Image (cartoon, rainbow, N blue to C red; front, side):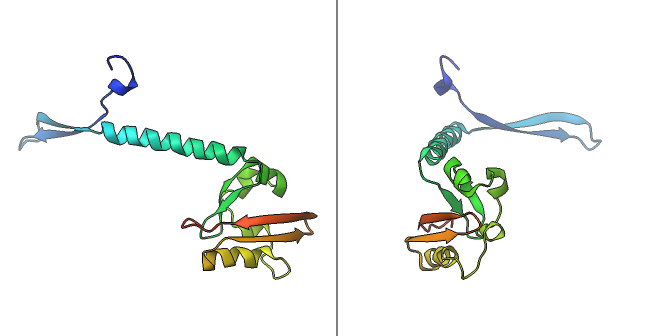
Length: 144
């Protein structure tokens, strides 16, 4: 670089060794590709993703995201405190493995309604095993 990060040219290189009929090295072919724009866009995307992650972590409500297989993919600190389960034990696990999927509770039917009908739902539910009332809003998306 001449002065700063913007002066970098990002490159990616491929090398091939040429050999003769006796398998003796006789040359090297080097192909370089300018990947500067791709790298800059990747850095922009990472910065944006970090902003979204920070926003989710700083909101005052519990927030989590479930994928289409009902697995936790994102959980903020408030949700961890409300649910009383460490983030590491939530991420990658199906909600039904941790919380009962029974008609006794309102949330399983409401979660399915949001996913199947692709509409937002608002509901309340009491979980006696946690001795807590929950007010929830579910927003379906293509991810879950």
